[in-house]
Amino acid sequence: MKIKAALLPGLFSAVLYAETSLTTEQQVFGSGFSFENIPPPATNDLGSRARWQVISGKVDRNGGGIASMNDGKVPNGDDEPRTNFFFAAGSNGGLVHVNLGDAVDLKRITSYSRHFKNRGPQVFDLYASLSEKPPVGTGDLKTKEWVKLASIDTRDAKRSMGGRHAASLTGKIGRFRQLVFDIKPTEKKTPFGLTFFSEIDIVEVNGPDLKHVPSGNPPKVIRFATPDKKYSFVVDATEAPQYENWVKTELSPVILEWYPKIVDLLPGDGYEAPTKVTLQFKNDVPNGVPAYATGSSVTMNAPWFKNQLRKEAKGCVVHELVHVVQNYWLAPRLNPNPKRTPGWVTEGLADYIRWFLYEPESKGAHYTPAQIRTMKHDASYRISANFIDWVSRNHQKDIARLINEAARTGRYEDDLWKKHTGSSIEELARGWKSQGLK
Ligand SMILES: [Ca+2]
Ligand SMILES: [Zn+2]
Image (cartoon, rainbow, N blue to C red; front, side, top):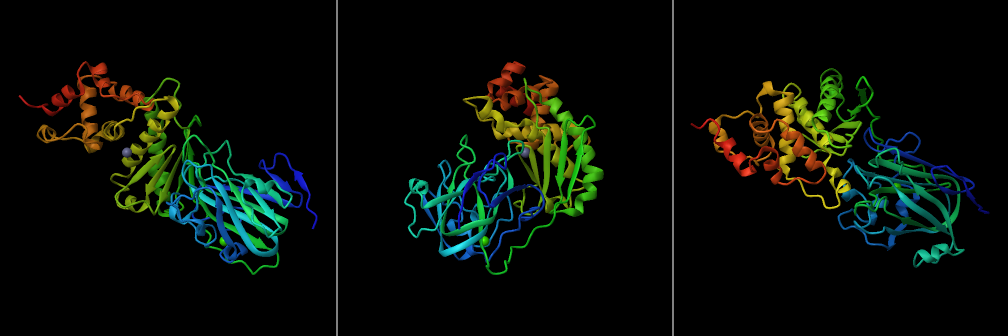
């Protein structure tokens, strides 16, 4: 068959053959791989029977290895190295070779990936050849034996990189014996830009009827925004639809009131807090972790919330929203030599806003002088929150704002306490512990 190369500008920045088309999708909500226009991964496609091997690049040993590409198994969560294939952290990616076993007419090649962050998107060039001779390196791919079928890049500058990504090349792809995926990092600012590939399907013309992994549940999301539209929120309750009503009636008013308040409490020179925040219920969060925040998204442990809806659930979300606004992940970008903020400061500030400003009436971090005498100010969470509250009432009412501003820009150091209160951290800790003593 005659194949002619054609450049189709603007179509997902992809270079394609004339008789194929490329679809890319990014899915953040919902469970499983449930894209709108791309089917879920197949378990009996040609890819499942082909021979896969890495011919250049270093495979990351924390992953599931090359078998993850065609075993018909997919991750259930956004950070499951064992069910994905990926090249070693910090590397430049590499070449994955697929021997199809025979000359086959192909009609679809679909790649699936999943990660909560920079390892989500896919950036690769796809080559094919009818020749029987496998390539030795990238140089061979430039010879006339090989054709480049597509340059795939599922990154979208307007969206964050996390989630499920799929790229699907369909149409009269051609007749080939072998394929090469030339896989590249999605970013090089960190070592963690090597895509978590969950599966790649290769579908031949006249192949068997395809069986697919179970498709997920369609997303159930609740959206709301502040009246000025400045801050918008999405709660993904796909994995916990039983909380939908609670989110609408109980949680959303708290978020709408408190997120802007937290932003005002923790300002910074030229700093803009995330304006789009995502909160997602998940059923696979480790036991004992009620919730956690990364960037502008909060993950909530659905089973933990069950008995907490009238107790700690809302306060727990407020605590996580403080982390979103704190945004200490920014420090390396704002400061070439960022200092690490100690965990007790990060968590103490979050619990201070939660227990002393959001829900002081619950007295969740109030202790008697006798109890405090046995405590350490850097014991984190509620105890550190109690210490910060004491410093703010007795020495410097803006201490939370001042400490946070330094931490966000990677400038936290213990001397800050002295700078802002006149007393060293040790002196403050002694004063806090001896309160109530005569
Ligand atoms: Ca497959
Ligand atoms: Zn926390």
